[in-house]
Image (tube, rainbow, N blue to C red; front, side, top):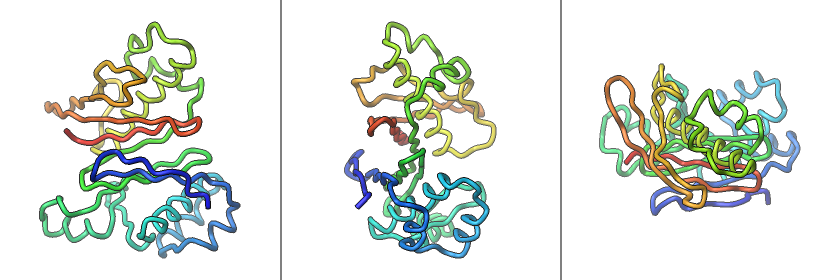
Length: 221
């Protein structure tokens, strides 16, 4: 069974991971897809992308949902079916499941919560460190070993990507609008801020190392 791991973020928030070892045909035969997803799958040219897409649906099935419970709003943000009625009636969010999705190479991940969330899953690689000056304050990498610099720059990229996913607003810039307070890799958590459109919003983040990947989850404070 390629279900790999679950990580409890808090009492209401859990992340689930699928390590993709199956071929595309096995995944396709064992997953339920709605019509929109079937059409979307046909437009994908990358086998890796197709596998990641199908593995997300396998994770949904693993925890008792299906692709028929998943829909995307006009901005491309994923939601579970229980939220659709909430979005129409503007009722309280407290009893509704929120979802965020990420996949990278051989892993897919979903995170379910009763809070608005954003997640990111990234493979640790030297390229992220090389482009770090484009998206972060590189002083946060001082006095670290090369491997820790790669890990921390990947975490910070994941923080910014997760905030961006959670907010899902056009115009947000990683280097100009999203910042993280100083943290250590051993902390596995910290705080971030979004300063955008003359408003400041605070977030909490947690991160874990899963094989050679960095997983980040961001929640509103």
